[in-house]
Length: 396
Ligand SMILES: Nc1ncnc2c1ncn2[C@@H]1O[C@H](COP(=O)(O)OP(=O)(O)OP(=O)(O)O)[C@@H](O)[C@H]1O
Ligand SMILES: [Mg+2]
Image 1 (cartoon, helix red, strand yellow):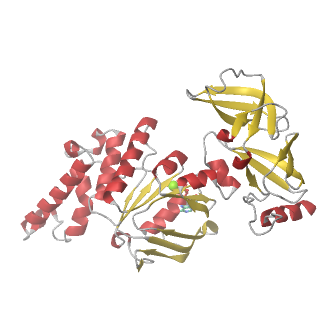
Image 2 (cartoon, helix red, strand yellow):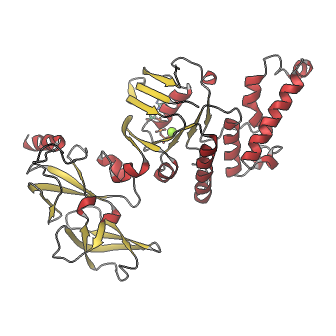
Image 3 (cartoon, rainbow, N blue to C red):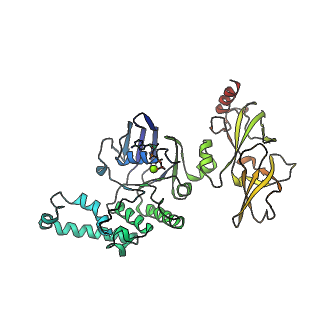
């Protein structure tokens, strides 16, 4: 088992900066997921950890050991790739045995004719077979050991790839989008299996995905990346309810968070979509801000209540116990989306006018630069630095 420490990691390909000053501590035995949109640098960071890529600057430790310049096979890590990278001409057993043969056999012992005759060879090969068989049983692929990858389903291939990584008991498991080739149903099943595998092995997992539901369901903590930067590292629930940045709020959550542009009229009051909205923080008047509202923060309301948005229903999606209601609000390009309990909102039709209230404690405020606006605990007159910046920008 091992902790991992990234210190000020930067990476550029030619003149293009791909990772900008990434610092991240991963605890021993933790399941940490790197989450972010395509091209944000997740695989590059993972490949640097694996030793398959070298950082332009910064330092990396696994356990107590600084591993800068240490070759991949000496890092005590195993990686499962998106493509699985299985050898098609080898059986499942041979694929899984490969890392053990590379590690336990000398160059001479690996030679097909001479190797067989060398002393101690039989004992080593029997031990390798036993380790492969035990790992295969643990992953329920014991009956597939004699097949070739071409004769397996996607899920079985994925298990073989995990088995090949697992067989030599690494201190750290790296997985780069291992489920992206599977259909939706199998993905859900395999993500539970990987989580169970983590629980059973108790080693450190670093998992890469751009699928937020994978990140939210499997991880102890999620590291959200964007354009080569680490925006927030926190447990999944905190990432959802307490995002530090508008980009995180918009990336996490399905249906998406509704974002409304607003102007602060006076302390505690903002104007958005023709509606006067009371806001929980005293942001400087004149500031341009954004109000973020999660689907479940809406409720059906009367028109005369405070903080109520009125619009025309564009679409109603029936999800069984819930309804997703898309509401067109005057002056907003895209509709807001509310999640309502079906039993409380049985008769909503497309085209009708609807009033939706917003729970004030669930309102997320963002400054013009996307940073979250939070109440400043020290002063009675709560002013956030971000809102001061946004006012300065407004004045210029
Ligand atoms: N060997 C390389 N040479 C030049 N540019 C590269 C190289 N590898 C990656 N990049 C660039 O670095 C950026 C980050 O790539 P990376 O593969 O880390 O993204 P990612 O977050 O894993 O994306 P995805 O979700 O699509 O796999 C991309 O813009 C990519 O084009
Ligand atoms: Mg990638």
